[in-house]
Image (cartoon, rainbow, N blue to C red; front, side, top):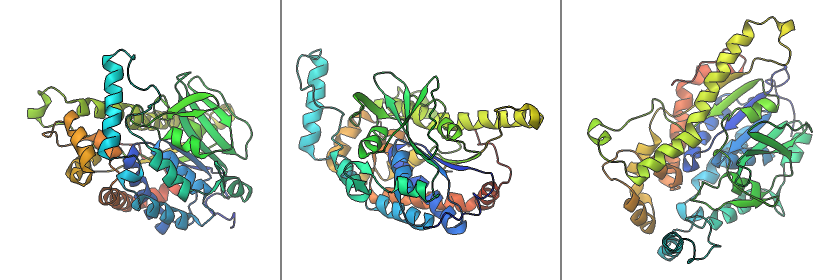
Length: 392
């Protein structure tokens, strides 16, 4: 390994922010694969990951191969996934959990097992990640080695504490100074598989994970400022990859008057929680940048300019999920259709839990194509050029 990196020998600190979105996070791999192939010297010093983005961030931070090889390996990992490698899809397992939840609801908690957590059993995901991440016991190895070698400055994995209702950043960094914010706390930690499972635990759907005597779930639930972990870790230039499409597609007029299905309501909630805040945060940061530019350098104090660029799909990934729904296991399709309205052309909720090879491969390819279409803009940004505001 070598710490030589032409992009980081200057005063810049590049950060890569990988947001959540379940299966949609495969899109991030395609965008990163194009960048790794065409700008091989790019290697961010700071990585932050939320939800499924935490899986990607941890894999890249722990890999001791070149950046291009690491991204290629991450793509292979996603392409080897199937839904039944993420959560149990057999009819018996799904029926048992559905009955337990139904009994607890109709009996006011007097019936049904209290130890059944989550709508599905995601133990296959733990086994899958355990087989593909470098582990020393539960500890993820490779991260401290990359920090020591100068290939990595900091890694932050975000979870949500259900006990306190606050976001928690679990950090491995060469900088031992952690921070405390109003909604985001930081804790230096040796990252484990439990941290990754907690960050990617979609609320209600996947079970929460116990960390330091408290239950933690998906990091996107309360993270109102998704770029703040990278800021606190010293980033001066942030590349963020979001799986939220632009422009945001709306239902056809004849469907807007129909009563929304449970799946449509869940999709709207998930977009609000996991996908919309990154764009708002980036817009706010660029506005602050313009204000900072007007302040003389000797009067800026702790304020600094932090350029941000957001990459995201040009196509609605919910529409693509609907088109590939037939690939899901039959038992899962049966229950999913009970909550869905088949006339709705898009299903954002479905797009987050559909881990089928053909769909994931399509997302990776779309990410690569979208990044290629913006290649000149991306290269200019990585090399220190001006950034563009994210579209709204």
